[in-house]
Length: 343
Image (tube, rainbow, N blue to C red):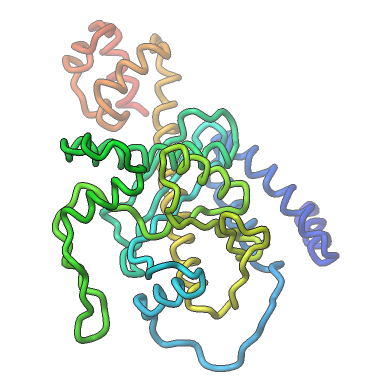
């Protein structure tokens, strides 16, 4: 109670940065202790504090809009970013690193301004040790678009004739081979008359973060030969939009439909990444129960989980099924079965 009072006093005195730093440290400690409920509570508290202390640049009197027009928002965004065409397909990346043991990322796709959940992707960061948002963003962007390149080339055996093309030119050509032109419908919306295609580049890539995350993503795209894909970084602190080659960030009015669309996309990527992170943490806690089972070493634990996929499936298995696992004899299988039935 005394700690909470002290934190409240610091906040009222304007010491929000110190308070947020202290809460972040508590969040990481809670995650290390596998107290993920507490870590999530602290994460939400930090997000609320940042929203509360965010400077207000503009206040507009008037009623709130009753509906959201996704197509109009997409066109507003194209104008605000001076894009060559409305970004019909947008992909947004977010990194979730509440704990250093499970750093994960999400990629959400929006088509015509609304979520396209069939094309969401989630990643476990493999090559980065500890919490490094820049390196994690680089890995995920590299994995996403190198896979698109590989799949496109595998699906089109005649690409050898165009080996001098830049990667982005090659992908655009392959896409064009399996698409028809777009035409507006009577209500002004864009009709998608595309045939099934093995490849589709986004019209805009969004990374959650500022200059560092954007630079990391741009480097990976350039290494893959994807030079002219539109890409931006959206920094949450002041909702600043960073663009390659621009020293200063773009700040849109807080009531701008374009900014609201970017916020919806960014928040959805954040939600999807956190949901995956919580799923992995829950699975880790569930798997840790085997550490208390007599005779189950780390190697045997891995063998059992590889065979059955999860502790819940292992719990439903018979003694005979457990015993048939490589490296697990009848006696240990009986012990594992008895242990799981009582826990």
